[in-house]
Length: 279
Image (cartoon, rainbow, N blue to C red; front, side, top):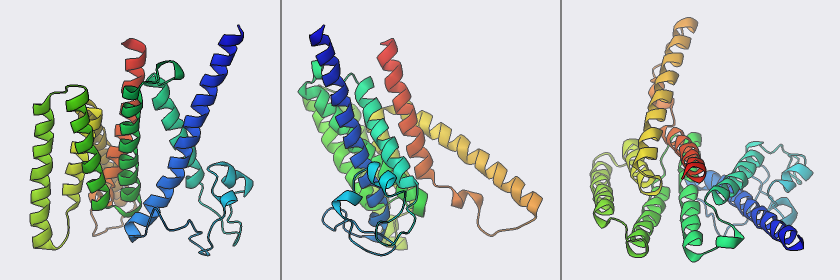
């Protein structure tokens, strides 16, 4: 009986650690989403308050607890901190925990393969959350984040082909798609002096397919298209009622990357849960 209680205690402690790590990543995501579009350093520059620019101390940087103890305000200038920081830290911790649990990651079967698989998922989540977050704030698919996504995708494909003997031809097709999209993006960059939003979305979709599979990716695209269609209908109805005409199209206001990222994460979690209970 004592061994069972001890085992459950260790298991609980293990999952608490995973939640804490997830909340730390959530804190990093908020920082990265804010700094990357501004081309600010995200690894070496100390965290600071965006209102008063005061460097934050250690007590200001504890995920979740710092926000609660500081009552949602900066310790130095008393400026209110947006609740999204707290929400993202909690969601990130919960996401890491849920994925670990439904992957069957626990102390009893903690193998190198399980750890590697979980680490790749964390790297992918970092990519998809950064793309979605930056797109939501700026309606932009950041090219540097996409480069990161391509890099981890290539490493993941090599890992699958070597360690798990995955179908090399399948991933060869994905690699070819990357090359074609990047070539087209280079052409548009030279012609229009900027990367197109569409090219960024296409690169995002390929990365999604590599990590979450074709079925989940196609379902994410369908849900995104339905959401866009519903938004455009509501937008046009609202304009017709208010009789306010705008030059900007409704589609230009939609953060497609955010919709794709959110739907992909939700569907991926659902797939994990279904696989856990029914397979």
